[in-house]
Length: 453
Ligand code: TYD
Ligand code: MG
Image (cartoon, protein in one colour):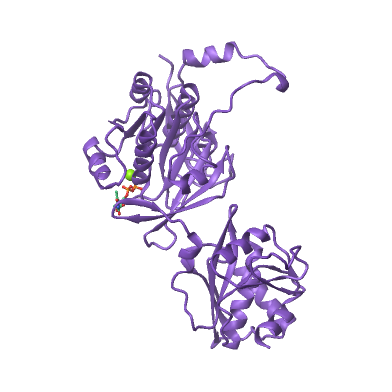
């Protein structure tokens, strides 16, 4: 039996050290090293065989068949995955407890099962009966999904080799443990090892595997960042407002664009896709209030119309307050300075509050113009045209700059009934055939003139 050795693993990056240190020598994080006892395992026969007959080939001679992706049938999720599930891939789904990870993966299981794939759902957290209780609430037929309540990785692999499923769900990776390691389930070494084992298993069997990962207080997936490096796709489940809607965000995708989002609503019968995300984020817009502007943002490749609200107040203290929710505070300060210097709109004695509705976070410069418009509208206390959207980056000279993917953004605005768009004069788009009327402005000063006369 190989000797057990003690190593220190970083909970942040998974890096290994031979002695305890206050700071991880790999990622420089403080107080993240934990002691783990590992028993190095002999390489399995499968791995050795794969290694011995491998020879290099020139790319021109590489042959293979493009395997079709499997459609889940939840259009939003297929979209985030890049067009469906890729056989042989390992997908990690992270999220806080209670957000709906088990529900979503049970729905995915049911749908893939309905499409004729063999699905094995391994639950390390709940009994088969608990899984059944959840399944009964769902609209999908779950009868043929195979359930296994088990926490031993070796046993799961045995069953997989026996059952030969097309799709494997592991709920969750933190409950699974391999007997090769001494450390407790959920520890860095275990999570890392289990994920690596599952990755090899998925590749070897050409099976799609989904694993649930719990999220730490800081919002990362519990277990180290290495977990994210091992898997092919990383999805995060978020609840931006604490309301019923949920966002599944792709942060890594080896088979498609990362950064795509999917929107769901958690109802009494599981998660339902939201077909029209922009319309949802615009719900409940005040129709008679100043300080509200709609921006056409981009989430991944998808345009999303979002309302930005500003509120200003005479500052009673020496230094005015600037509070931004869903927007970078420093960027707001910069835009306020631009407003004051380039558009002669006094902001330096005002408290300014900015809020992005729906709990979204806007990080693109393309939303600058909308922020400027919302703040100016609040200062003047004049309502903006409710049928106008704003798209443009604002520079320090007060100039309005063009943004990428303009057609997509304007297309979404037109689709939702918006009539006008304010944008950079230098934008390369023809007036004719545009989905909305174009109000081209060269700079912030001109924008204020056009808006408020
Ligand atoms: P769950 O999938 O168990 O979350 P996770 O696996 O991420 O911990 O979902 C838990 C919550 O979802 C729970 O509070 C009940 C709620 N829920 C619904 O609102 N509707 C449903 O149809 C189901 C199955 C769950
Ligand atoms: Mg769960």
